[in-house]
Image (cartoon, rainbow, N blue to C red):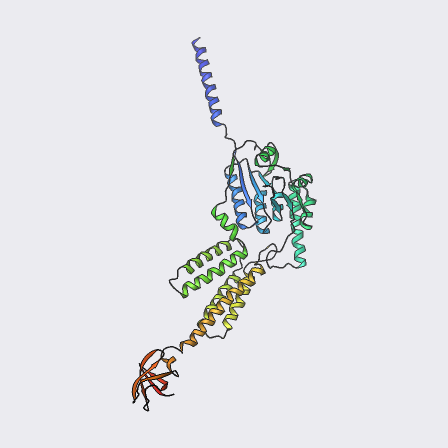
Length: 431
């Protein structure tokens, strides 16, 4: 009897321990990560999205929701984002949100790459025809090549995700754009959701393929963790524009020149240093052509040399040419590349060149005026005899009394002309 009670107690204790272990080992519900992707598609936003996907993977998130609102952007950045989404180890949901948001141009490809594509009411998607950015002009052959490449890439994405590949081609070739309701009807996106909670409820239980494996989404009621933009991302999003980076470089070089030519001013040097650092920070993410950078630095060297060498404008002209060519060659354009806009390049080059030419002219005039001051500047001037010169006395010149000597006697009040300056004594004659 005692033996049976002992067995019963042991069994009960084991059952309690197993239940406690099961309760303690139950995994906490996986969080859904939410990442806002707002603004143009550029290296700053691409870096933010890629890092957000990595963070969701590290934390084993239930899903990553990218709330997208973009007018489009750079093809290189778009491809970086698409590659990160299609190779992600967590489910990626692209949600065009909030109302009145859009997924245009590069945003269409990003939406198509998602495991689940959703849109809020009042949003639109489309207009994915490739556009040459900046001043780089694509010839017809290159344009056709780029267009066909984009179409093939878009159709491949749509087919892989089971979406409307024919519409995707129209969006690229004909720049068609459609509202959310029509996008769902045409199977461009998977569903329409009013808000984030509605989205998580509607995609709950959906089966998708992630990394070659079937995965069931568990998002209804899941905790939500937002991934905010850091300071680096916010700064890089705005300065990773070729036009902004070019202007920052110009301001930086001008500021450093002011500080070096006028030591102790502080502010121009600080401003120039900050602008140069921001420009080089942006250059890390842009396709830089270092020949362009060297040409711009050479232009500033020519402008500075103009101040000390009388070249009759030849150095300024060389600086102008180098600055213009450097701006044109600063970024590697081409297929999906970036360039500086004509509307930014021409005014910037004109303003910077005009500034240095004006300063050079002022310096040149100051060199000419130097001979009109001091001892050399006194020769040829006229004064009035203050005390009779017989042969030595005083004359009044330029508001000052000078000792003077003359080869002939000159009475007080007569006008004299200065022939020579001998230390602090003038040699004069009757005017």
